[in-house]
Image (tube, rainbow, N blue to C red; front, side, top):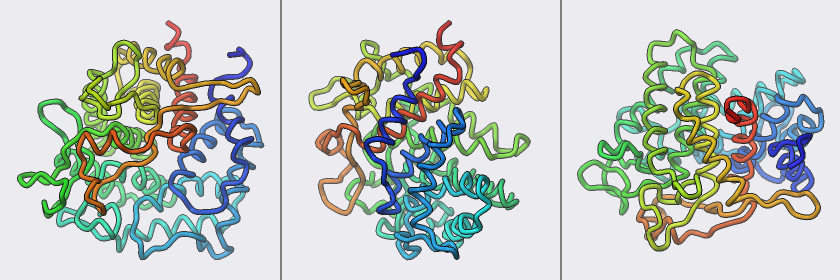
Length: 370
């Protein structure tokens, strides 16, 4: 790699060249790519990155803030994620459509179906079910709205989302988190005693720790439960680091199952752990004893998942294309299910999280080099 162009910029420029138009739908996976580009715009202040975001988001939003492709009636937390970019667009342009659109998304939380304790259902089609993914998809947007538009009462709801999911999905023995929880304990994947799913899927835990570390950007420094969230983050990442593959530095699709037949090293979850570790260290949430795992992990991503072709474009390999719980009988949360889902190259969830991770690692480059 040239000293003049960082890994984050190589990937960002690859995305701009390879996917110039992502305005065809309102999609949470696009939102992950946009978030990576946004992080790079903040780092470089290069106008082309901001223009990319606006050209892909503005066409989907009407003057009155309605979002083409967003349906409130779906009550899907996935629909919230791309809304995170609205704050940057509004701050930069003062175009009211972006504020109005953000308020439309914020209002979803007022009527979104919840469990008896107040946990958001992941989607209306998943009644009484909450997944780790939802913390990333909804909570950072929600927290930024609270801070930007002075609704501090929202913070209590966000803290409850995180702490309640911790209560229901954290495994006391390993410290790892199960993918989902069913309040009714009726789903095919739900443990009949406690309602959680059976496996420790890598990307679900990645979404969770990234969601927490991003929420902390907006939670007031003196908020009473702030330290509790930092403690949860430390605990999860301490457990994740214990399962880091010592040979490669990266992590397996099913985190605790190592090189069991069928398991594989997975890129998006590895990116997410590195992002959370690097940002956590930079912000002071995590002690620097995590640095060796961070350095080993980022180098492992470069060595085992990244390829730069002859044209200077970057490819990212070994990303789980999709995984979930329920709807069909095969989505049972088992090891066999998670390891049977398709593996993709240049999946958006991998590309976006690689940019996010790279920016954070580059932001503490002096620590990483030492």
